[in-house]
Amino acid sequence: MATLPKSLEELIEALGALPGVGPRSAERYAYFLLKADKNKSNRLSKALDGLHSGIKTCPKTFALIDASQDVSPLYDDPNRDKTTVALVADPFDIIALEKTTLYRGTYHVLGGLISPIDGVGPEQLHINELKKRIDDDNVTEIILATNASVEGETTALYIQQELDTLDNVKITRLARGLPIGVDLEYADQITLGRALEGRQSL
Amino acid sequence: MATLPKSLEELIEALGALPGVGPRSAERYAYFLLKADKNKSNRLSKALDGLHSGIKTCPKTFALIDASQDVSPLYDDPNRDKTTVALVADPFDIIALEKTTLYRGTYHVLGGLISPIDGVGPEQLHINELKKRIDDDNVTEIILATNASVEGETTALYIQQELDTLDNVKITRLARGLPIGVDLEYADQITLGRALEGRQSL
Image 1 (cartoon, one colour):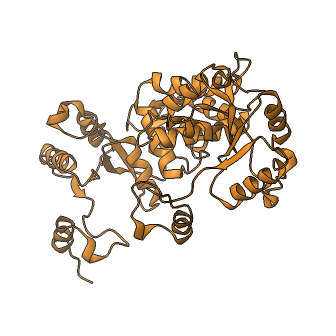
Image 2 (image 1 turned 180 degrees about the horizontal axis):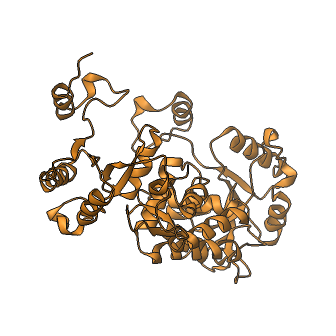
């Protein structure tokens, strides 16, 4: 006994495939789109159609760029310091770092993190391309900007060892410590431990 | 300084128009769709395209039905009791009631609730069509299944008065009381008051 029109059911199912969207939220989104005028769903549908065709990976930094671009505009920007490279796991990490508006260097996307459980080894990451960039652009600093997770730390350690032979490249890592706005008493012990270790003189 | 490819930005914006989806969630959905293979976004886009064209309103009950159907299949079902009509505000309320699997009657969608603030008066609701159905189908019971909100109560009261002249139609209302799984101490006082008023002998 189907009480839902088929096209509504199909939309709810498709929306339910989004991460963290349960059947209840999927229903809510679908009802909203059905009640709203047709432009809203048309706009979303068009944006979805253009998604994969409109985006490619920068061959140099592996950031996501418009399909019409040759290389990441951020990398191409003369105002950005090519000798400082922040190493990130994902193209989306770039956006998070750019939001700080504090970084004037460039990025290199590893394309993942070392995770034996998921079958990701160092050979799948863009490490050779990074080495080439270090040579080509006379890179002087590599900032390891990987997640503060086991995989992130493992990858950071691996890359640190890989690049250890390069004498004129400084390797740094994002500071670990108390996130802003979090009470000391609610911080977990590992974070607090790192904050202690990394304490700075005033 | 655009760090996001244009097509990704467009999708994030379109997803952000969904109810309760902030920029963070919209980003998350867009990234997920970008990382997932093209089928997922194609499926969603197709479902969106078919949404409005595939659905129409039943001319009898005002429920949502497939564009190919003449009348709500639920209304057409010989196993459903046409003499009992549950009056709901929205087509989506039907789905909620159907999920209980306890109701064997039919439905009538009002198409809203009386709300002077939003400019919705009784003349905009499908009340005349309800009266016609009461005559046509020899309806014996109208269940007022509106929300337990001010608008829902107002609408229920209005319809009760409207149908008061019909002698052979019983008018009932959904019970108000404690929701299942909620502790008595956490129930609000109005709900608890209604639960007391509506107490049943065992």
